[in-house]
Image (cartoon, rainbow, N blue to C red):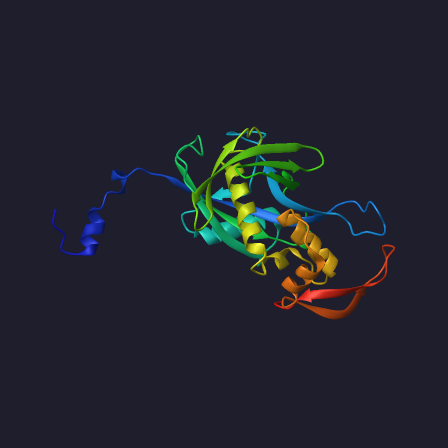
Length: 272
């Protein structure tokens, strides 16, 4: 049929000629957790943490997953991600960036679902309201080798794990393809989403200011260095670390006292 206008074309347009799919958004919410103070002369141990939800319905009933939702017909992906973030954490206006779109054909057993994942970084001290009752913070520990990674998650009650097989896809950009193995605990393809987010954060932390979204307003340089080290999973030399963050922080007149050691100067992020 030949149409004389776009209005005429749309009037006769039949959308059912195309296969239908659903769109979701899943949110990686990362933060830093404080451990027990094993020695009063030392700083509390820091843990890199992710927020997970336990599903109370099928599919994947009783499995853990990332907070997420189907996209509503009247909202954008960014609006949906902010809605999910607020619903699960009661936080607004915090750091959120699009991570990747996951479109594996069998990622959801119900129907064809494509998901755009977002990564959010929060300071847990701002979480003054109760989290979703099915939510829990899990400490993240990644044991890396050249071609494989073992991801261990622990919330103090449950221990989850999965293995990642890494294949170099692009030598120039150092981009990898990930194949998830031995995953019995996380729903859908959320193990892949989680590992992708961990790698994104590790790659950005040294050349951006992204880490400060997980920091309180005031902190010591030792506390900041702990956060870098727990995310990068490596020890940093003090002089090199000080040079790396020198232009990003400023010293305040505040000091931190107690803990069995001398008062420490408190710093804050210059960008705030």
